[in-house]
Image (cartoon, rainbow, N blue to C red):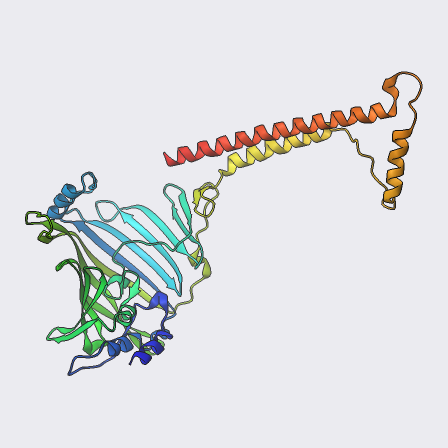
Length: 411
């Protein structure tokens, strides 16, 4: 069965491994981890791309907010009142390793759009842009948004699909059959356990799962409804309604040296999600995974480690440098006599020696050719030093403007 699981892994699509197929099956006995892994991977390669739209309503509980303020003073924003719902709409497009996301925020009335954030990842370069402030970022790594996307509804855990977790923990994962379905448990990190409730009659679809820390439920996700979609003749189930609760620990016993205190989890954030539209294997233009920044946007480039220069300031500085160089070039004397293309090295040396050995002309020493050449070279080096000095001043001026711009943007 281990071999079968690895075989189906080759058919999987990493970015879309969250899709569960509608595969009717029933188990009279407890299935093995390898069997579950096989079914979760089965025929997964039919999915090439996905696009979905969703609405998320999230709020903090009063008890959880009070506890959070005690644990981390100053964390809670005054404008973010507990129990007040907050709405965000998302449109996400994924194709292989490419990903794009539009994140729309709403005001307190849950109807008026207050702002948008755009994310894009083309497989090697990421971009982020906020149209309202005309600010953005060029990023080294794929974007990460900690929200309740469908992939998180029992399909992916910490960025990895369920079947990958099971494949990596086949030796230690525990499976048992209950009246509600198949329960699978495996260790995620030290003292952190993931417990899934799967439906064996529907291809081991996730009904719910919990993240258990120190014996208490720190996170719980429940899928309330799946939608069925036909893709290339195959019926696929996808979560369209689900809800989640994230909790934080509260110490309920005195802390004694050498002993772990008793804790209980207090719900902090409650979220409900509805998927309004899903499309599979549609033709997606490649510019979907790119963001074209406006010319007047303020963009920070992680590759360069600095903000891109303001186009207007850059244009003024370049123009000033060009004018200064042109003015100096017009005043610079021509002191080097061109050497004919057919002249040999010996001929050039002979001309130089004859000039050096030529006796001085009668009259004033200022009319001597040697003196004239020497004076011209002195003038030339003085001009070069002057040009270098001016360029150094311009460079320092440019650096000052750029650093001043960084300080203003950081403020």
